[in-house]
Length: 478
Image 1: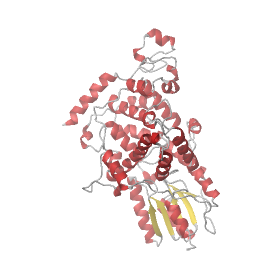
Image 2: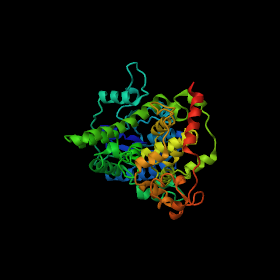
Image 3: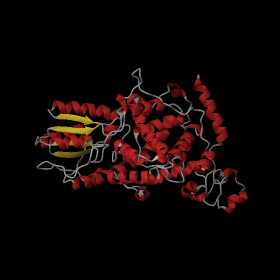
Image 4: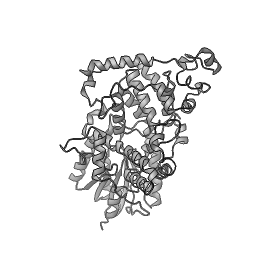
């Protein structure tokens, strides 16, 4: 066995279980785990503020996990290539290993790093640690990428996805002398203004927390998941998305645990398959981003390049701040700001409202989500916004325009979600809670609501906005 160490470059794989680069490195000999903070290399999609908050705590968790194995995490800030070359020379490292990422800027960067390290005589290997199937391994019979989810997922299932995750470690051998490490706090990932107070109440970060969240979900919420996942007033969803994005848990671990929970239980089959199909949507998002990298900023359906979007910054700020006058939209946007998260159904509602009621470009919404979501994932964010705007793969037709009132009535049937995040409306009852502009003045006064004062008047009339959106769509339909 070689005695020269192997560097494992951690990125979006912040765990020690089912971490293929770490497993391969440990099989060779001593391991030096490394994290390099170089956000400028991911421009124009460097991690947003909420992602940086999560990253700080995830790295702290990884440090604890490695310490329990007798290892440590070497943290550096600076150019990734220069840092890895310097460490490889300093340690006389035999190899550098990492798990692949699929964002366009990162792919370009990693190809250069692999080439330069190899030229310096360092063995380089990369692994799949983030997906069930990598984007280039799934294609149509004509060898084209898929642009519709259902046949894509059928092909994935037919290819077999029941992989066995790699185990973790009790002990990791390290180098004789450890290189210097930058203190995590010096990366400046945490905010200087305490807008993140509620994050601490909402989230436990790190691989152990991810594994516990999965166990709790499978035990308590897998049954009836198909129906409950759309409710926004109850937590019927898994909330695993930030853990998956940062690689605190792998999709293989999720797959195996879910299959085990379903085994022999007929009443869980439908819900289990539906939950796994949501993992499939994450796979589909990465498939699309890899094959259509321009879609982070431009529509997949080219005719939408000509869509007559509004440029109103006033409307955009009102949407961002949860001041649109539509309670379900405002509640969801305030939830996002406070917790770094909102339920998937709420995401669709607020995205539809931005793009189709306010006629603001989906890219503006994608950028706001990127900065405020703890699970901001370039692939999933791009897919979600293009789907809602009607300009992407497998997209909802543009004429499918979510009605905020009916969506609130259906998925927040008692108004609990709205009352929590728009407390100035708490004394109203449905349907007035969903559409306060239709409530009579006596009802509003009794509830302490003064439209335009304690709660904003609605920015647009949904019916009129819907007609305007359809007219705009007709202009580019051709």
